[in-house]
Structures are given as C-alpha cells and as structure tokens.
Image (tube, rainbow, N blue to C red; front, top):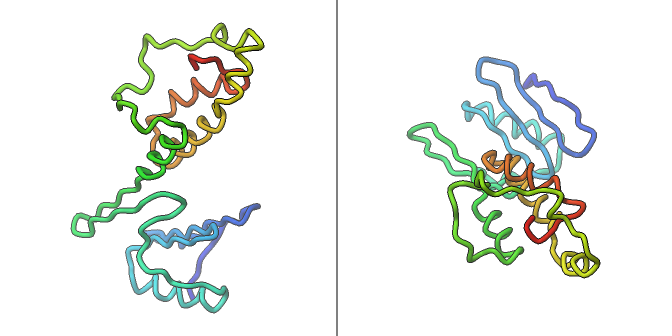
Length: 167
C-alpha cells in the first residue's frame, strides 16, 4: 500500500503527494499527471489508482492543460511551453502577423483613464473589440508559463471595464 496524503479541493482538481526526500506529485483535473523519479513507484501508484478509479494509462505525458511538455532525460531537464496556445491567441485576435518585440510594455508607452471611451460612437466601435477576452487569455499564459507577461497584463487589466483604442 502506498502511503500518500492529499489536499482536497472544492472543484474537481486535487493534488496528492508522498512525503519523502524526493516527493511525488499527482495532479488531478480531468487529466492526471504523475511526477516521480522512481518508475517502480509510478507503476505501483498507477495500479492502485486503477483499482479505485476507471482510468486509462496514456503513457508519457506530452501535453497537459494546453501546455506542451518536453524532456531531455540525459540531462534531467524538463520544459513546459504554451507556444501553440499563444499562436492560437494571436490568430483569434487577428494579430498573427505582428512583429515580436523583446520589451513587452515599453517605458514610454503610457496608458491612462484619459484614453478610456468618452463618446457614444467610440463605445459602439469598441464593443466589437474582445478586450476582456484577450486579457484573460494572456492571464492564463502568464500564470502557466509566461511570468514575463505579468507587468503588461496587470497594466492592461486596469482598463477592462472601459478600454479605449490605445488600450
């Protein structure tokens, strides 16, 4: 029997972990991801879980929650990427052809409430711009794999209720 402890979550996600020098993390949210150095332990854990739950073993994880997983076993390194997610965001908001920049929000680029909508005709035009949806999409990328977006996302999120063209 594998001794494990878990934090119960209010939604359908849970995090299980084994306390030892090298902890095992079992992340559940519709899909399940097991991270553990010891392959024998992983096999035992999977066998135990199959007794409790109706589940399929899909093998080595390549993607979870929209994030691609890349491994280099020889160096013991792991990368998580949302490149395809970001490309889909750019396409969704008609920005697939934009030129990438290294500075996400240049110092000279100032946003303020003075740039918010003032006239009814501006309101009609901006109602067709999915500003809040774009900010939420960027927030997901920021939280998962792109913390470098945090400053820019925090600034543009200030104007979600009344964005102007410059926002």
